[in-house]
Amino acid sequence: MKKYKLLSGVAFATLIFLSSYVNAQEEATKVPSSADVAEYIKWFPAIKQVEMRDAWLKKHKMGEWQFTGSATAEDKTVVTVQAGTNYGYTWFNISNEPLVVTMPKYDKYYSLSVFDMNHFMEVRVMPEKPIVIRLPHQKSPIKGAYEIVLQTFQGLAFTRQVMVDNEEEVMELAKKIKLSGGGGDAPFIVPSFSKDVEDAALKIINTYAEGGHDAAKQFVSVYEGGGDLDRAAGVSGGQLGTQARYVQYGALLFDQNKERLNGKGSYEVIVPKDGLLRNDKGYWTLTIYSFADRFLIPNKKNIYDITSYNAKANPDGTYTIRINPEGLGENAIPSAGLDYYGIFRVYEPAKGLKFPAIKKVAKK
Image (cartoon, rainbow, N blue to C red; front, side, top):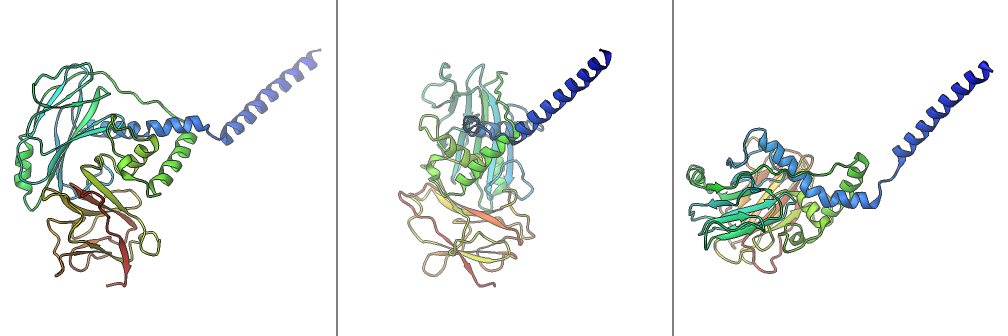
């Protein structure tokens, strides 16, 4: 009888072990449910917002401004950052009261974008009045101000000031951007997901982002709608992108032969004389990024972009932008031999604009 009990105990333990092993194997090969993947895609913009917020808060406090000056390849705060622009960041919490932002006047392009934690946004270009950022149940402390109503307690106020060989002037103006009010400690929490769900969702997001879908749907306010996959693709390609009526983005991923851009090759982009801008306040800019990490590409010349402010025109009024490993030629950006992609931005875009294409050319 004792021998029987001993064998039964061993058999029972073996059965438990085998059962656990089989369950573990089933979990390892289990395909994530479509509902879980869709939920991750829905939360993806918020997940990236939280990552950026937490990285920023390691060196700064809520309600404190950080200004970048001219962005370089050393800036790792935001993927697909635009060169030639002074960015200003301040994360805020308005759970207690609204926040008021006052900006100084500037004769070149500048704007204030306000993002909630789901990456919905509102934008004010060259504002002449204070901007009040509040929740739906809060009242504005200022009459006649521009008002931005958010759906989350926390958010990011984000300024862009274009620089044209005047960084010192712009940085002095940045010091005059003032905040008042705000405050609060209500948290913003995102759910956790398994690695399998994350991997499956990211595959869908990346495939969609590379599919050339309408960028106008990727950066929107909560009141304009915008699909979860569109917003996720927009955030994946470049956080803090702006609504299409203010800025339009043209991705340069493939050459005329439908081959992915190669850092060892030479390419040209012909920018037309007219048809891009709706007024003389706007401008265009082309920046390239490492395909591996989506940051600016380090190079000895410290050149990351060419814009309508600094490009030299051809005799017919068009512009030829050159991209090659060494950055040779007029209006040239060095790729430093790294595989890359480009973003062509148009501020104050004309209706129905067509982005210039990139063409592979013989090596210089």
